[in-house]
Amino acid sequence: MTRQRELCCLLMTEVAQRAVFWTDDSPVCEPMAHGEDIAAHFHDYGQLRYAASGALVTTTKVGTWVAPANRITWVPPFYVHSSRSYGETDVRVFPVPAALSEELPPEPSVFVASALLREAYLAMSGEHEPAASERGRLLLAVIGAELIRAPQEPLRLPEPSDPRLKAVTDLLHADPAMSATLAELGHRTGSSERTLSRLFGSDLSMSFHQWRTLLRIQRALLELCAGTSVTETAMRLGWANPGSFINAFTDLVGQTPGRYRSTAGAAHS
Image 1 (cartoon, rainbow, N blue to C red):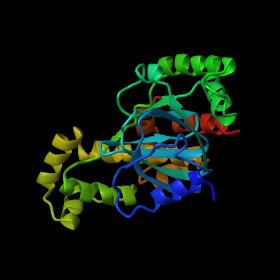
Image 2: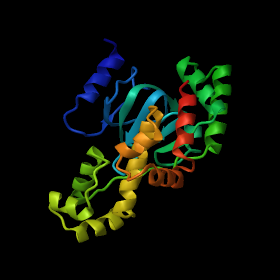
Image 3: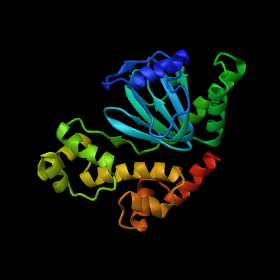
């Protein structure tokens, strides 16, 4: 077993979800199996992560970011985060030079990757091109230029700090299709509907309905990326009919789920 793999196994078996300072340049050491977790950790450098196959979910104390096909995740220096894979996930990572880090957002973000960005990124990370080489400098310049102009995926799902609200969101994370009302969820977790409604507004700056819809859309991205049909995705995630799912998805993502599914398939072909 390599030193890198030993470090991965050590961190992934941490009992407590405390943040670990990770000095290695490749926290995701090998292709990840479906549902594999990387425990909470941080680096003293910024990091880009791209799933050449599968999908990667990045979670912090303040939110969750989903990066399926054709998306690149940015994690700033010293930002505590954990990860989970969906599908057989081949994650390509590399540290970001300080000059480029300063040009990128101060919190984790997911960028829509152009074909040029994706190919330059894969050449840089997959071939382990030294950043100091002439080719490495050129590839890094392309990556930086494309990232700075790339649109950001708007689907950050905020996570609560209040334990009463977290008890509710944990239930929904476990079953996004759950049709329970806020009052019913409050009954199950020991809080009133009024209290929970207030907490959604004060802690997450959105309503219960908005948060659950955003959670379902994030999961829909993963389903569609895996090749699930639009109709089956709608049914799996609790929409009454495909039309309401298509409308909600299009409003938040900016394209129809059918279009997104075909684009995700092309990115992985």
